[in-house]
Image (tube, rainbow, N blue to C red; front, top):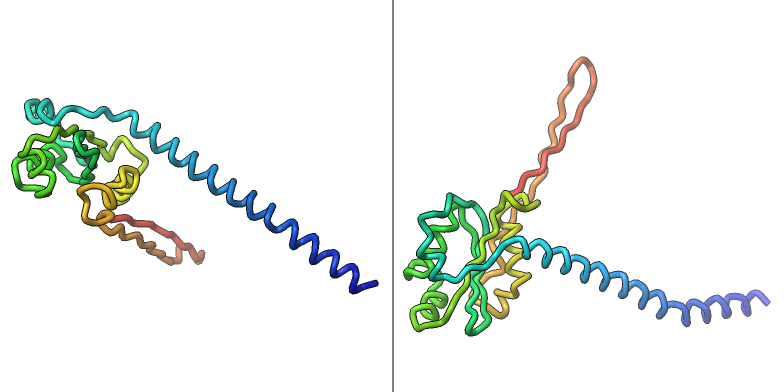
Length: 177
């Protein structure tokens, strides 16, 4: 009788496990869809402008620390970059002192748009993290001008221990580069 119960349990687990796997995969898919919705909503805050308009009004831009997206609208390719002075860096790309492929396509007549995302308008703690997410979002490493997935993001934790009035205290600080 005992062997029969074990066999029943094994059969139930065997037939039920695909259901649990499907449920798990659906939950993961829903999380990915929600993350994508959040990123799309976030990006909708920042307008794209034609590169000619950008270059003409470049002097009017304040110093912006952030990420920029250069979108070749003819070929549907993007380049994502970061800078402590976005306006100057974007200008460099279209004057031959940036990504050579972007400049070549621009020089030979492709139309581009520029989108700027100031770091201060985000929840990101570093330009590297924001840039990496945008490179992934725009698929600009596999299907674009980026040659890397972004700068490496260094994350480290420092723990300090000290005694005050005979009490042991521990503080942890997290840093991002």
